[in-house]
Length: 401
Image (spheres, one colour):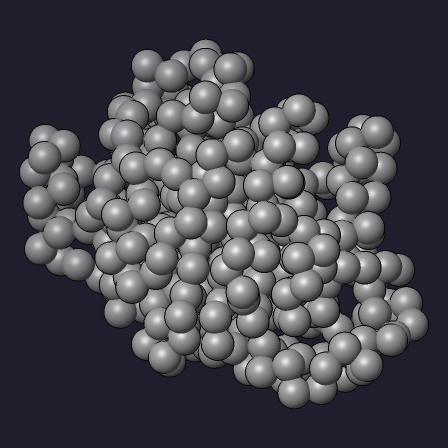
């Protein structure tokens, strides 16, 4: 098959979808990655993927640029003569599903990596995001969701037999404990093996919990070193917060397994996630974790069994959980071991990639006639991927105030 994966930026192809792209290539398919071009194109093409640039694509919404990008996308899709278009990310997910249908592509599939609106967001934002998704769903043949909560939110617009919660995964060969990498990274930071290191991974933006992480670093800075690994993000002009001096910003790194292995505690104070990749990577590397109790994080594991969960934007609770782990080495070891066992059982990206390939073939074999379906809520016939939570997960317990 000729398969294209569509994302807004090339970084998503290289970092988020690399295992899926590689699996498609290994299975003998001709694979294209469509996105705005950038410095990750070489990494994408090294996978055996042909990168197709769309210069007008931007992450932010811009009516004029988006109209041009949509026209370019339709022309590009028609020229590629694809069998399958698989769309990703909120913006290209909406544009791509519609463009794919207009271009006459036989199979159009979308993965919801996390809705761009939360239930507590302003009504105007929720109406825009949910409305755009509802329209786009009508143009797709199949919908994958990375978490059950997002599918539940969109349940009124889904069609029977055309959706499932597939979860998410990481490259378990690449992400595993790296003792030598741990020593190297800690030496680079001037830390001994007994010094405590707390870190987070992600874009340097407020929605990743930048302010909360920095405040906890300020309060606990005498107990541990706090690091932030990830790129700057020009889309968040407000990403300067108090107490940043307490955090060492390391920028982007390519030795991520070593970075995770160097940590004693991994923290993700994010406000919104689809299904946190960084948390899965940390789990695979045997690291104790503190995550916010939100969709996309609570699916990683159970509170006090695999990790600790804290309420979103609750800095005192976050600080309490981090301090609890800093004080208790046996607890860190227990949670790290349990998280790694869960990652190995539930977070293999190759399982997700193979499920995508099965779905492409299934849709192609049945043709479009089977898609005349009725709007449907949660579909009890869906087959859950191993380890993906299908119901509500336990939240964080009461804590000292």
